[in-house]
Image 1: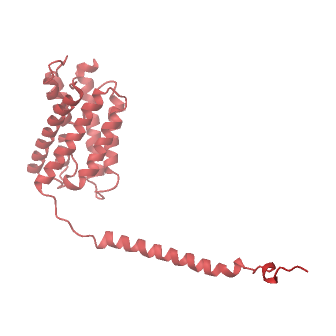
Image 2: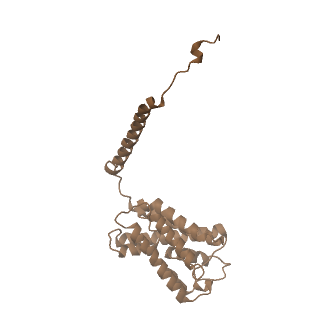
Image 3: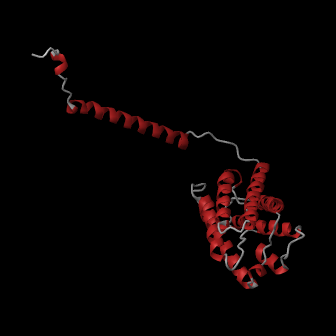
Length: 254
């Protein structure tokens, strides 16, 4: 006979089926708590969100200046680096700046876009505010152009002669792709569901697509603030081999 106590031979029998109701009730309890917590968050966001004051005019103008500055700076540095990813960098920076300042100023960052929103007559911006927006956008572009020149020690200008193409080629491509950009802004950025989650991405991708599409035929500014900033900085470069013609100024700014 074994001297081992009987209690060490016998193991208690645990029935999984007996514990199943307790497991199910525990799961239902956790699921119910998660559901109540989610409903509480939605209720806070939708019904009990605290109101914040509208941005002051100086805050809106500063947002447009800073956003345009970083967009134009990215253009200058990316083009100077001669990377094939320049359109992607520019489009991503535009999207980031729009998401950053969209709730402050609307994230226009482009005099052509500002004019398009004004002419749409959707009461998104007044003529007086649009004029101030354009002024700070051009100012941000010029400052960024000089900063890009200082940082890279090189500059470029927007001129159809750079691509060895005609006036008509650049005019057509600038016109249609600027139209596409403004159309996306009006459809996604000033739609009934704005501000939404996708408007910055859509606008940034329209710039990427336009730059990649016409890159072999046109420099692809689509933004008068970019044109002015890069061209004026190029005038300051004593080693620049080319400056924009009168026709180029017309094509890339108007």
